[in-house]
Amino acid sequence: MLTGTEVKSLREGKADLKDSYAAIAKGEAYLWGCHISPYAAGNRFNPDPNRTRKLLLHHEEIMKLMGKVQEKGLTLIPLSIYVVGRHIKIELALARGKKLYDKRETLKQRAMTKEMAQLTRGRADRG
Image 1: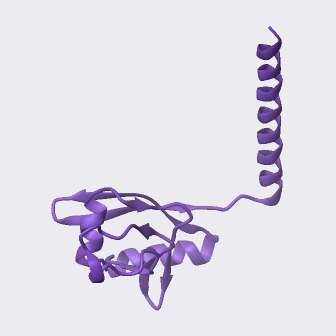
Image 2: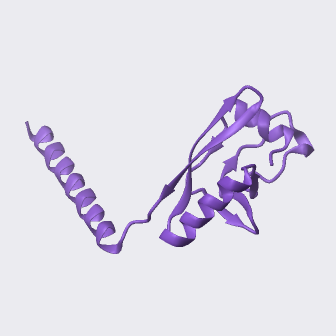
């Protein structure tokens, strides 16, 4: 659940979902690692920006997500935070992590594109 100053900060668009994820513990959904910047006029009422926040979901939704996370080894990833009227909503997705060989392939691709950029930069300097 969010505090008042967190809601005001979210309405200003001061949230970072990088490296955050959702998990189900004790039959309830929680958001971990989401950084909500302190509200400028919040003074002492600002909570810890990286605290764990409880997500409000229906029991059926929680059970459905819990089954998929446990059975298929998926992870709940927050994609976006948006405002609908009075409510702050978080769009969640089920995602599967990369295998080791996929990570190696990504690193190879990144190294190749970096090398190509350096080569083209070198040609532009000479010409």
